[in-house]
Length: 556
Picture (cartoon, rainbow, N blue to C red):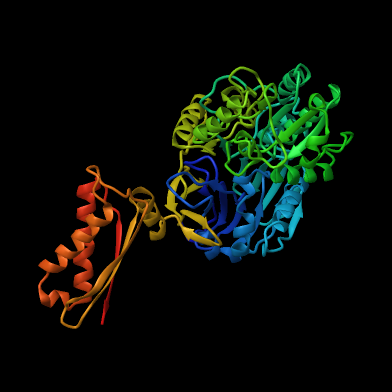
């Protein structure tokens, strides 16, 4: 192929191989002169393998290198795994950014709460808009999801149209917002779709996701028949669920109290966008003590067991304003995200110990997913009829199973890619043709560091086996001047046979120095290395674990 020939490529920097951290790129033009369009810029949440880290971002160093050819960043919806990295990473990109009103307002209210966060000039887009981002034209199409104003993008290029679904489901009665636009998607399918880049989250589940309206009916029943106070916990961004609780409260003569800053922010934005029109104002937590118990519904953050969230503090009876008592009912109107089971279980057990009734989706239909099951994915393939399928938004198992499913749907070409893979969509046979630099960045305090940074590996070692710090002085003849100073942390104080751990350490230090030749004792580095190895070995023999050992030798 001549170097001047145009190509259309797709590359994900996040979201292929994990659920979260979504960031996709579309490139058009000759290989060395491509223009790029970015879709979404989200976060992931750190697991126990990254102690001290809360948020993980996609590494956008590749985008920084081509930023002069980056025509824009389009946000499909306002969930953190699609928009949460914008405040941190947009200054590295400096491109035009587009979002619907709800997403833009939520981004702004979050940005304003972060000291020093840069002003981001978001351009508001609406359903039906066609964004002219040459060589791309991007049409914004409504999709039902668990947050208002979720959209798919029809990305048109001279080499064909790609439909990027974002997160979606088929829900004819979504409570808030528009349903998935079957008519427009079918029309785009009639025009011809080159490739479908599609959500894989629920591809392992048969059938079709229930409607948000069904949850609203069940919530009304559970709130209506509760003898005392009711607390509902859900995702702060699930405005339809909060609206359903508000409608149930009104129908049953209860007032709504909102507890949690994230929920306060989301509700403020939703009211501004008209999603709570006709709903009475909510009360804040400081009204809790003054409203009759049987006349209140509390909506609170903490459905995933987050330690700092309102519900976790209530479960430990540590919330300054909200106290639960026997007979109160807590409804988990959410699903437990894989990996959060222990934290959620801790909260539930804390509530049960207080005599609180806990209702979850194990026994009641009080939560529905915002993602499509297999029957819904099949419908979308029937509407769009793409030539190429690229499974997205999923762990490796989800992507693999989605690929098998797409083949069953009769799709000619299925490309199961991973983060960093550059997928050639046109011209010619689709294939993975290159790999872009990619990885993860961790928010460590005020810093962004690579997930491969040695400090994070060291932190894991410290968490596993603690640390010993040793300092001592040697004379120019190599004699010990004074007693060594030893401090250790994260280790047991005594061995299995009752011997003090500091005695084990002292014995190892003195034995090493006594057995070290005078020439090596005159070399501070050699002495430090010998003591480090000896102390690690002695503790390993006594404890069964080898800590990190730091040794400082001073010449006097």
